[in-house]
Image (cartoon, rainbow, N blue to C red; front, top):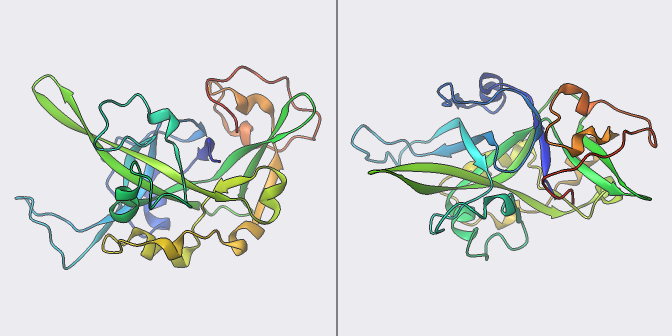
Length: 253
């Protein structure tokens, strides 16, 4: 599962890393070391551009960094009340489930992350780990997105939401949890973002090469509370010396 992660780079850096254009227009949140469901997050998308009259140019595509709300709301939903429960979509069923299949076929994105948090069961409490690449590179979490229209008075405004795909854990990730985010290797980025590719089934298997390069770092249980949000949450701590857990608003596994 992916229920918390860290997003530390600004849109300009992400745009350079993902060969995209920063289209956040000043709406991007600052660094977030404890991203929780329903927060605003940066995501990378690739679409056919439209002209001033809304006509789509099918001959080219544009890759951009945009801001989305974490927790998918299908376009047909009556309200946004279920968003916090739809932060993840299982890669095994994302092409079949009514809430996800249209987005999986037509609206895919990459959710950039410095790493994600996972909690390993233990005696009396769960030990949090920060799972991250060993360098300063950014993880490309496979995501899907949707547009839900919110009525505000006489106007309807779009709310763009997203979910992160998960898969069965492989390699060392199985030592912490039985699920993990689907992390895309660089050679899958273009295909995953391709707006004309409507069957991404071949892209849904986790990459062992990616997993083998990740580091599992035990961190403080301060991350349990979304009230805590600073770089120290990603710092390593000796196992067994973490602080007493704090209450949380969301489940940890």
